[in-house]
Image (cartoon, rainbow, N blue to C red; front, side, top):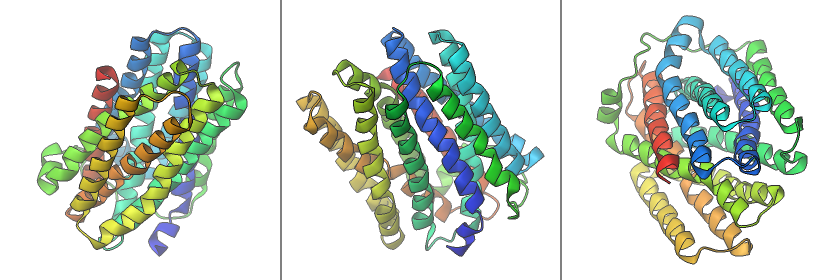
Length: 343
């Protein structure tokens, strides 16, 4: 745990990035529906993010190898700032699809940088707990961003500008940190074969989580909008899912440090699938039951990826952490790209 405290600046920068990302994700879905974008266009906005996410997973390791972890993270924050401001200036579906790809690139890069750094300082006996703390911080920041949208609304320029301020502020903690960077990457090549050989179940889990959560994150706000919820109601709906998902991170992370992580993933996946099926069958209106089901889904689905990453890194060799992080994000991104369009 002391090792993680040493990189608190990176955690803070990641949290600020996720706050802006939480604002931007909900803002684009709801504002796009209000602007009259088609359901296909809204789905493609989610797919654009995922395509950018995949591209970032492949190319950002080369940026890190050349510029170092801290400078590369600053580049990702700058891209996020530029993108959300262009969302404000270019209010049309084609532009938003393309710009969403840039956002995906930014977030894949930031996640790869933080996760490879984190796994380099973590030990197997506490890896699940440490990674779940990191995920909890990110989810809490993203949820606060969504709640901020419920306060600002989606009209006008204010939510876009606040998101941009959050992105650019993410530069500051990492730029000013005195903590040493991880060792330079010896190779920037993503090796999916290495990842699958290291942990087949983690690779499959990353793809499955991407499929499910990509569809949920992109189209669930549209579902809430069509069910009659206003912006505040949609933000609250997602806040419930995210908060319960964040609450579940640390206990399931700690549990996975004490029993086989695969058993934890199986239990969470089965429960999430059951809740999803019940939601489809019941099809609740805008009432308390919808919030209960969304919360239960978030509680089960959100911790799976963190446990899968911890499992993959348990078997990774020294020097392979960046490859494992990039490979997991690449597989996750492929699932994220497919899920919204299929849904």
